[in-house]
Amino acid sequence: MTVPVLTIDGPSGAGKGTVSRLVAKQLGWNYLDSGAIYRSLAIDVLKNNVDFKDVSAVVEVAQKMSLVFECGNELVVKLDGIDITAELPSETTGNTASIIAAYPDVRAVLLQKQKDFQLAPGLVADGRDMGTVVFPDAVNKVYLTASAEERAKRRYKQLIEKGIDANLVQITKEIEARDRRDQERTTAPLKAAEDALYIDSSELSIEQVISEVINLVQ
Ligand code: C5P
Image (cartoon, rainbow, N blue to C red; front, side, top):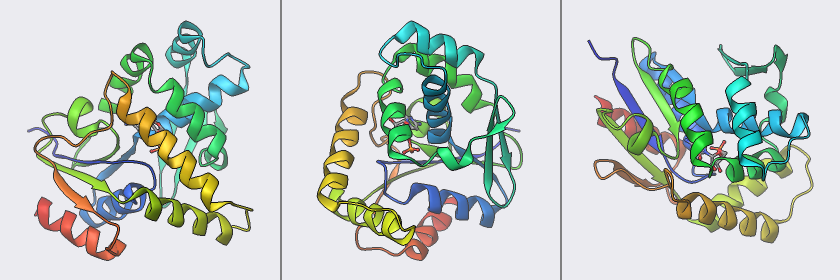
């Protein structure tokens, strides 16, 4: 029997991570944070002082990358046996990830690593191309978005709560630049699958989004 997959795609800051994790928990399914795979590669590239503009060098790092995801209460990611979880959320990691994610050969190397997460009893896959490229046959697909302004405000609030100095105008600019890069790349651009349920979370609470997603699956 095919293991069911629910894909949740959308731009950064739309709440995909939180929604995907909580939905996976409610359903008792596995969870794939595909952005964390691209972020881990970015960390590997930066740690090894590899020029991220050198496509073939980045592909080589991707081919050799030894990555382990430990999915307990919190996701723990180990690169070459070292815990890099704390380094994943930084802006430098995210921006580098978004640059190297535009290279088709890098995406090709990382494709199977993502497909390997499709394990019983089911999978919630969070990313940009989960419903369009990685799991095109998924039974349930969601495209979760929110206005750039709202996403920037959420990110700003998160940083301030963590005691990190932040600038709302700067964050809005970075979010818009990342959206553009993700949407305009030729390979696996960020877009809603034709058969995806489109949810705009700008005016919705996390609970409301989760209940729409759970309704879709059930
Ligand atoms: O989702 P997250 O912000 O962690 O992703 C970081 C970057 O990785 C994104 O900006 C995007 O460029 C890339 N990514 C991707 N395809 C995915 C997930 C993430 O290209 N499925």
